[in-house]
Length: 159
Image 1 (spheres, one colour):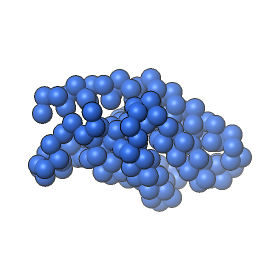
Image 2: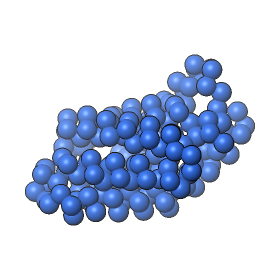
Image 3: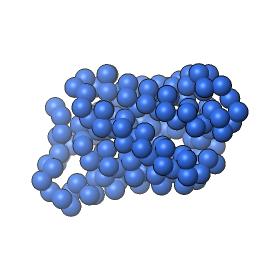
Image 4: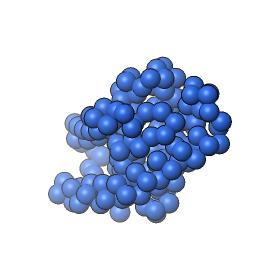
C-alpha cells in the first residue's frame, strides 16, 4: 500500500509537498503556546506519519518544520535542528512497512534529538525532557496521526 500517488507528475509532487508544509506551519502557529518548549503537544506532528505512504511528505514535513520553527523561541538551533531531525524521522518512517511501527521514528528521533538542545536551553535535565517530548509526540501521533494517515490514504485513492 506504499506510495499511492503518481510520483511521475512533478507538479503534483511539488503541490503535495507544499500543501503538507503549509498545513504543518499553520497548525503549529495556531497552537503556538503548546507547540514549543520542553513540554509540547505540537498537533502538526500528526502529519509525521504521512511519509509512510507518500515520499513527498518527507520534503513537505522538513520544509514545514523549517518555517514553523522560525517562530520558535530557540531560534536558529530549532530551525536547523528541528528540520534536520524531521528529515531523518520522515525518511525512516517512509522506509518502515508497518503503520504502527512507522510511529516510532518521529517519536524517538524527536524525543532524543530535540531534547539535546531544548533541555540545556531551558536548564532542564536531558532524560526528563526526553520523556516530556516523547510523551507529547506519542499522544499526538497515536491519537491524531493514525486518523490523519487514514484520511490521507482515502484521499490518495481518488488520484
